Image (cartoon, rainbow, N blue to C red; front, side, top):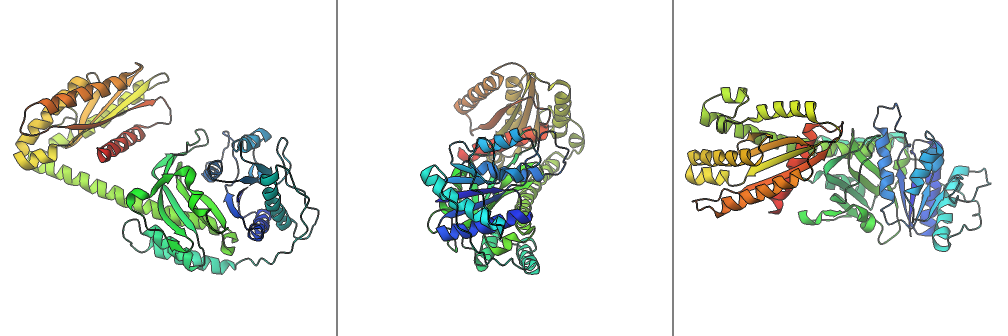
Length: 483
């Protein structure tokens, strides 16, 4: 049986004791228990400028994980919000048997604990026992007898030394691509933890108090420690359904897990799911563990961005060397096509958005990639390549008449238009498909083929040009990989 325990934070002494009791009950009753510390619910009117609300994203996973029953410490999780906000969280889990730790109108609550000795440990133990019976019988059992607990909290200095060991390994040394997460899992395995998963989304997902995130359907397994062994994957095998994350972790022998969201600022990155140990209850230990994994992911992301920037610089150097004119790169005009260059496109695009992107309108953003240009340059020389670029520029000027468009890299064009006309993006896609067909049918020494991404964005005052271009570019990269 799989049980989820939703709590606020492990730094709360009462919550910590509840987790001690719950973990002992899970072991005694031979069930899987996943502890999910998600902090505290916040309202949309909250003045809190920190990103602590991002922790609650872990609760969104609970609805999809294969839990047979949920235990929710709703009073503590919702201590800063009105009762309706608490009810909204609980209603997310409709269809899953659910018990609250304290009474909440409209929801079943665990049996009260009368024993004052180790009261909160008893509550945690009672909660798990009640949850097992409740999932099987749809009703609460009789109260459990009082238990004794021999839990010894790990020394804080020992936990700190362990965190230092992990951070030194991961943040101060270099490992082959994607291997840092395996190193992390191996360190946990050496400490006796049998199971751990590091899971990240391919692209960070925006999540704010005002605009809550939508959990992506797919997530990538960066590391999987199962029963003490690191799982080896082919790249194509790493992508899994987000709803199936716990399928591997919960199979086999019963275990106690802890799960936390990985985030940076306004963006969700993924989550960490790992075996629960005594050290996890040291104040801020699990928070620090999440921060280390987040740090590794950020370093990996920045390394990829650096490679991409170096590539762009190299392309600019090639263009400068060929054209011998710096003025084209300082001004707004592209020397080859006569249209806008990168600088000119962005300047006009920002002005367009500022003046015309208003409620009721949408922005259409397109990226067009000359797939064949490098081959043309290589086989027939740059002069022929320049002719091919000018031809494509003329086609785009016709297709996207009235739009702002420019050549932003040697083989890439970008387009933006603000419109209230329905179906405009589909019209552009159809016209680009027609133009591609014409290019392919033309008799020529080479194939001048285009790959393109055309995306439509509804008005949102928080939506930036950079975000729209990024999403369109990422969509283009996926298209390039699939074709």
